Image 1 (cartoon, rainbow, N blue to C red):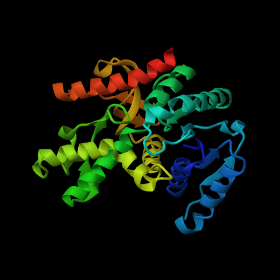
Image 2: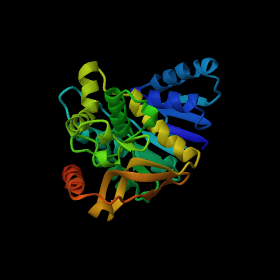
Image 3: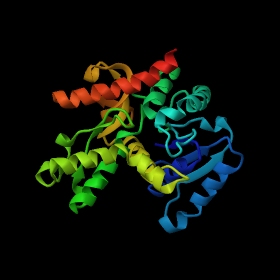
Image 4: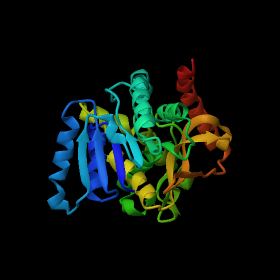
Length: 308
C-alpha cells in the first residue's frame, strides 16, 4: 500500500499514524484535520522519532481535503469523543454531520479508495458511510472487534498469568454495551479458556470487556482510549497492505449473514489487498445468536434514527 490518509489528527489518529510509520506498513501517511497547524505538528513530531525507530515512511499533515488524492485507504477517526457518563450513541448526531462532510470530500478527491471507519458509534457510522458512498461493502468497513478482542485477551492474560501471545479471543456484535464476546471461541494456545477459568470469572471478564472503553475513560477522565484503538487500526491496515488474508473481527455490512441485512455489525471477516474480502458466518448456538440479535436491535435503533 502506498498512501494512507487519516482523517482526524486527534489522539487515535496520531497513535495510528505513529504505528503505521514506525512499522512501515505503507509508504506515505497523511493526517488531515480542520484545526489549523494541528496535523502538521503531529506529523512533524512523528517524523522526529524516525532516527530512533529507523523508518523512512513519509508523514505529512494538512488542512486541505484535496490531499486525499491518490489515497489507497482512508481511516476516519474524526469526531467528538465520549465524556464520562456518555454512551457511544450519545455522540451520534454530532459525528454523523462530521462524517458526512468527510465522505463528500472522499468522493470528490479519492473515489477509488477504501474507507476504514473508527469514529463512534462505529457500527452506525460505518453503515452511514456505506450508504452515502454507494460503494460495495468490500471497500467500506469499520474497526471495533479487533479492539474489543484485544481488550478481552489482555484481561484473560491478567487473570491467568499466561502470555497474551497465546490468547485468542472473539467478540461479535455492536461496539458497545451490547457487544457479544463468545467464550466458546476463546482459547489459550488452542485450549478453551474454560479449562483454566471458572464460568463466574469468565462472565466477569466478558462484562469488563463490554465496559473496557468506559473503564479507561473513567480512569483518564480527560481522554478516552487511544493506544489500543490505534494499534487495532494498524493491525487491520497491515492485513490489507500486505494482503495477509487475516481473519479478524471487523464491522461489516451484512447481507443476510447471521439473519441480518442492511446493517453494520462486528463479525469475523477476511481482510486482504482488496479490503473486506469475506464475511465468515459462524454456527452460533441459541444463546449466542440471541445475544447477537439483541446487539443488532440496539444498532438498528440508532440506524433508524438516521433513516427518519
